[in-house]
Amino acid sequence: MLFLTSLYRIVVCVALSTACLTTFAQSDTDDDTSIHWQATNITQKHDSFVAPYSGTNSLDHQSATAETTDSTLFIGQRLWQGAEIWINPEVDQGFGFNNTLGLAGFPSGGAYKIGANSPYLRVQKLFMRQVIGLGGESHQVDDTANQLAGMQAANNLTLTLGKFSVVDIFDTNAYAHDPRADFLNWSVIDSGAFDYAADPWGYTFGSAIEWNQDDWTLRGGFFQLSPIPNGKISRVNFGENSTDIELEARHVWWGHPGKIKLLAWVNEGRMASYQDAVALGALTDSVPRVDLVRRYSSRPGAALNLEQELRPDLGAFVRISANRGNRETYEFTDINSSASAGLSLKGRSWGRSGDTWGIARVVNRISGEAQSYFAAGGLGLLIGDGKLDYAPEKIVESVYTASVCANLMVSVDYQYITNPAYNQDRGPVSIWGIRTHLSF
Image 1 (tube, helix red, strand yellow):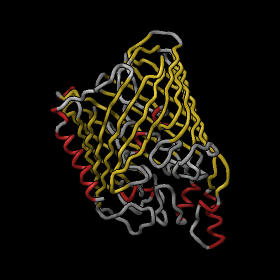
Image 2 (tube, helix red, strand yellow):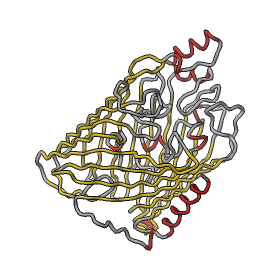
Image 3 (spheres, one colour):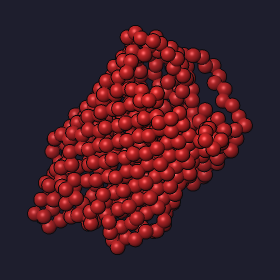
Image 4 (cartoon, one colour):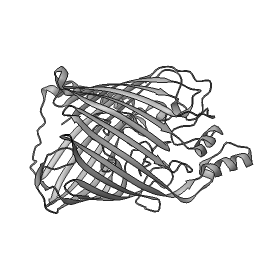
């Protein structure tokens, strides 16, 4: 196993070192076929920090290093006019800090909830997309990962069906959404309280429809939740499910484009009330456990998502989100309300037009019911220190991404987290990271 791990890392390193000297030739492909590839390595280190106590899901208070590597193929084929099918086989390896535990706003978007020392192969996405033109001006769509080149009507219906990520379509943002290209923290790249349907790798089965018009889009989606919170999805079953609706309005402000998105969702499945878990723990003189009090119920939420170009090389974003905080988190992370904002600046002014510097600030909170549950020793999806001296989790992230060449990007990332996992008895913690991203 160690040999396989070492071999995989060597192959990736060789590819990274020769990226600027090679070109990618798509043999036996045409406009109806597309093949792309990417590899990303994220290595992070956090300093030692003050921690008078720790629990099962705590971030290790001693200095630690974590590393993840993923390599993905994007293979697409046109089926007929407007229809495409895509498959994304992926090889993954590595762990987030503490196997992705200890922080609600987790610092690495490349870390899944299941890690492994040795590389393993999964088909993360397998989906079909159908675009139905409704008129309006046609525009050129470029050939990129999971998108075939061609002309497309501005006004259209887009249908997506299969296995993919909910946030491929919902809650997107031009400045903060891609852990392979911009920010890394979970609560910066997505709305922190958006408890979207996903397996431990971030994907699920479902369908989405998008009605695109000149200056607005209305989206709807229906997706499969895991059979139990944060569980693996081994078969298609919509007994536990999530419904998402998003309205996007596009505008031009002082000559600069922007978007405003309003997202609402509701999850339905067997989930626990924090109050029921605490009450049972008090009755049995034990630590509260959500798995003992789950019953079929629902949990709604909403998010506001804004992006605005301020000048051609500078953009800003804001996200505000909240969910019903009386029940356990089902899929994403232990956040009941979140507010984030930031800036993204291209390097044109210092002669590096391909580079980008970004800075973001986020504040995450949990409900009073959740505070009581974690104070009594309960465990969440990512957090649980055994007890809790509550304060909002506050995060500042700064990332500089340098374009080494057309195919290779290298980023340096820094995150400063106060009150990790909402606990002012622990921290603050500084996290440094280097991300290397290669794409063809």
